[in-house]
Image 1: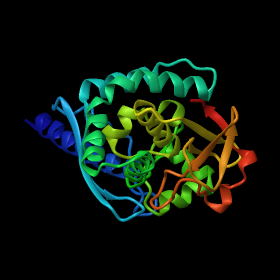
Image 2: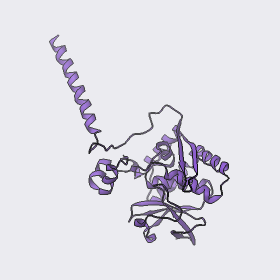
Image 3: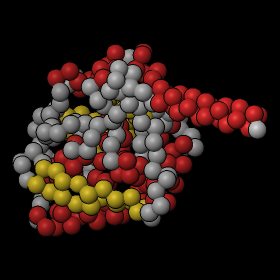
Image 4: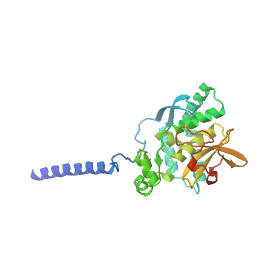
Length: 267
């Protein structure tokens, strides 16, 4: 009987210790920071659905249900995790092509909105980009978020200000299907998603990356003004996608030197 009591108290002690350890491990570094490494694999639904309300730069209101198949979500993520690519161009191209036919429900939602509004090409593009701009920005990293936090002041500042971070993601990017499933993401997760969407709707689009700025933006060959990147004799106007309000041809002043941008994925 005495041994049973000892084992019982030992069990209670170890359980309490485990709870304290897990709590400490997930504790905010300064009382408010959390690192999210969660996935959606636990869902039992066949469909991942995100109903979203937003408005564009012209204050037009929109709403729609953006859905992807759970199996497609897992398949896309697995493809990304096991991909072999020798450049960003090859990586982006393979992921975009793999996900292209897995976004049919997203295409349908956007098409229904555009039909309802009878929008011409520029306005439809603005609708699509403003949709992505309104989705929360989050950090996506190949390394651990805690490592970024202690080694990079810009990441530390963003995390301190409440930006979510998911670490140990292959290539530090969400696939287009994954972006809709998680409904958050960083700069190149957004540009790759938009590139895939715009290709579906027949736009002449490229992805522009900068190693100097550590950033990714969209380039769209459509009648506009402002900043652009010349490529194959055409003008691809820039589009910042990580926050609301940026228009085609605009760029934040601190990333506006076009010589620092290169074509990461051509049309």
